Each structure stands twice: as structure tokens, then as C-alpha cells.
Amino acid sequence: MKVDAIIVGAGPAGSTCAIELAKNGAHVILLEKSAIGRYKPCAGGLLGDNEKEFGKLPNSVRQQSINQVLIGTKDKIGKMKPIHDGETFGTLVYRTEYDRFLAESAQSAGAELYTETEALSANRFNDRIEVETITKTGEKKTYLSDFLIIATGLSSSKIQRSLGVEYPRETVNCVQAEFTIADSIIEERFGGGDIEIYWDAKGIASHGYAWIFTKPGGLTVGVLDYFVKVERLKKIIESHPTISPRLQGAKPLLIEDRHYWAAPIPDRIIEYTYYPRTLVIGDAAGFVNRMNYEGIYYARKSGKIAAKVILKAISRKNLSAAYLGRYEKIWNREIYLPFLLDSRFTHHFYYHSSYLDEFSKAVVDVLNDETIMKKLYQEAKKIKEIKYLYHSEIFQLEMVKKLQETYDKDTFNDMYKHFTHENPV
Ligand SMILES: Cc1cc2nc3c(=O)[nH]c(=O)nc-3n(C[C@H](O)[C@H](O)[C@H](O)COP(=O)(O)OP(=O)(O)OC[C@H]3O[C@@H](n4cnc5c(N)ncnc54)[C@H](O)[C@@H]3O)c2cc1C
Image 1 (cartoon, rainbow, N blue to C red):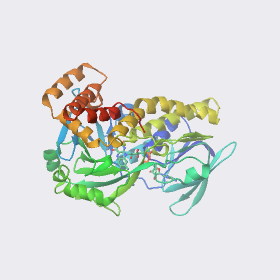
Image 2 (image 1 turned 180 degrees about the vertical axis):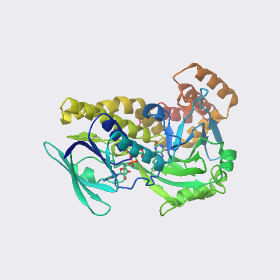
Image 3 (image 1 turned 120 degrees about the vertical axis):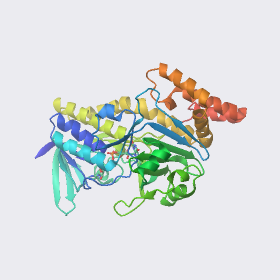
Image 4 (image 1 turned 180 degrees about the horizontal axis):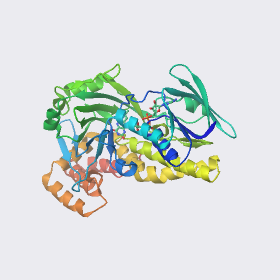
């Protein structure tokens, strides 16, 4: 039997797309090569408007609100609170529970979920798409549909190769571990509900950062750079001057067969995200913020947009590739322009200017300047749409002033060139 859509991959992108399609009456098959409950290396930070956009999470999934952000350099730290009372920076989750919740929500909405079922290849015909699958026990089966949605993240490119669909080739790499530590120590050292970002070009990464995200009973700790190995994270934990003392006594958890997990994140959006009868969503399309490399929001948002376009195509009986081109127009308007374009600029001046340490020191200097911070919070409170101080123009301006006070004219002028987005890559 031919269904409306087959979605390959039950991560945040695929499950969200399945929820939206199924709850609006489409017949959907969701294929996932792993068992539900697989470990996906991810810090689980749902920043900003995730819950507002996609609905409140149940308490069993939502570990903690993010009440504070800490920015660290090699010798200093600075802390930031949300501007308005009652606001948070977002939510922390463990991906195992989060992904399980989303896949089960897709099932409850009516999607057929087949786990431990890998999509091996697909063939496109004039009137259908055929997807060849194999289960963990070796059973082969072919599923038929009008549309195929590729939501495979970066863990496989088989399906793309069979259809001539692009796959993100430019990536950054992460190493991450989950640590156990007593809640009392988390409360004492981190204050609870805290995410910490550390920049240090030589001691951590010239093209990325290290993080500690605190959750009840545990810490998710990792490092991101162009090329990074497990030894780098171990060294940071053992001896980095600002990070190491905060992790004293924390033990890495053994998950499946290892303590440390490496995984890539895409570093570019692919050139074509729609093809005849086919859309590409989430990491498989390269939708990430290139400053902090968060991707869950964009994975889910692209899943939602893809579902909307497919539902319209079905209702208008227009299954043409040209009609699917609306997907690109909408993600450009709702994902790229409001979020990802700006991250391309900040990416440039933090990671490609050679001034990463100077910029991050200026951020921490502003955060530690009580007079400025008091004034900033007062000013920011008046402007309703500024939610996060760090992203506000007034914060950025104070940062530029700190740079101007600290460095000679030529150096400052050179920095300013990067800061004002000349020559972004
Ligand atoms: C170490 C690390 C930390 C991160 N931290 C954060 C963070 O704190 N916040 C944030 O927003 N983002 C974070 N990210 C990015 C985030 O994890 C991704 O952007 C997000 O998972 C993308 O979702 P997705 O659904 O597109 O892909 P995925 O989550 O990768 O899901 C893809 C799914 O497809 C399945 N699959 C693949 N191929 C097949 C196939 N052929 N057949 C069937 N199934 C298949 C996979 O098993 C997988 O379940 C982090 C990434 C890493 C690596």
C-alpha cells in the first residue's frame, strides 16, 4: 500500500515532521534504524523559544530550566541572568528521553513507527517513491509513498547516495561525556540550571568551545572544534585552569560501551533541500547555528515547515518538485534570515578573525563590570523584544567599548572590521 509520506530518521526533525503530518490526517511511516532509547551525543540545551514553538514538555522529559549562562575564558568567568523576571534561557533535556517522547508523540498522532529498521536506498518513479529497508534481524521490506523526507542527521548518507541527494560534507566535530556528581555539589558549584560556555583558542579550541551543562545529578561536558579527539576533552577536564576545578570529583558515565562519544555537526546548509517527491530536514540539511552549533530548534522547525508544504501539496494535488520549492522559500524566511544568517557573521568574528580570546575576554569584562551591567539591565528592560542581553545591541556596544579601551588604535580597527561583519565566510 502506498502511504502519503515516509520519513527516514526519528530524531527531533523526523519525529516533529511525523507529528505534524499525522495529526493533520496524512498517512505516515517513520523509520528509525536504532532502537528507541539510543544514546545520541548531544548536550540537550533547548535554547530560547523551543517550548513556545513546539509545546510544553512533560516533567519527565524536561530536566531543568536554564536560569543562568556562564561565559568562561582561560582565567576568568562572567555570569548572565535573563533580563525579565520569570524568564529563562530555555530548557535542559537528556536526548534519550526527549527523542523517545517525540517518537511516541508521532505514534500517538497516528504515524506508523518502525524502529531498528534502516532505510538502505530509495527509488523515485513518476507515481511513487520506493524505500528499501532492512531490520536488525535481517528482514528486508519495501515501503511505497508519495513523498520521502530525509531526516537522517549525519549518521548515514546511504539514502542520499541512492537518490543523488546532497549530504552535508562540511562539518565540525565534538567529543562529549556525561558525568555523575552529587546534586549538592552541582548546587554549590554551579547553582543549578546553568549552562557554561568556555572559549580559549589555545587551551580549548580555535574554532569552537567547551561546555558544561548542568542537569539534576549530572553534567554534560564536551568540546567542539574542526578536528577534535577524546584526548583533548580529557586534557581540558584534567588541567584547564577555569574548567578543571569545577569538575573535580565528577566521573564519566559508561554509556553503552564507552565513556566518551564523538559526533559531527554540520557546518553548512546544503545547496538543494528539495528534489522531486523529496525534502531534506534537520542536520541532514545542515540547519545549525554556526556560533553555538545548536540544531534541535532548527531540526524541529524544518520538520514542521516540510510537513506544512507536503500537506498543502496533498490538498492541492500538486506533487511537483516546483511546488516543493516552497519549502526552501519558507525555511529561508523562518529559519535562515531570522536566526542562521546572523550566526554566520558571529561565527566569522569569533572563529575566523584570530581574536577569539580578545572578544571573549571583552564579553567577560562586560559581565563583571557591575556599573555597566546595572545600566544594561535597566536599559534592556525597557525594550520588550530584547530577551537575552548578550544578543542585544547595547551589550555588543559595551563589548566594543571594552575592546577600544584595552587595545591600541590599529589593533582595535582591525578587530572592528571583523566585528562589523566585513568579509564573512
Ligand atoms: C555533542 C553534541 C552536542 C550538541 N548539543 C546540542 C544542544 O545542546 N542543543 C542543540 O540544539 N543542539 C545540539 N547539538 C546538535 C543536535 O544534536 C542536532 O542538531 C540534532 O540532533 C539534529 O536532529 P535531527 O533529527 O536532524 O538528527 P538526529 O538527531 O541525528 O536524528 C537522526 C536520526 O536518523 C536515524 N537514521 C539515520 N540514518 C537512518 C537510516 N538510513 N534509516 C533509518 N534511520 C536512520 C538516526 O539513527 C537518528 O535517530 C549537539 C550535537 C552534538 C554532536
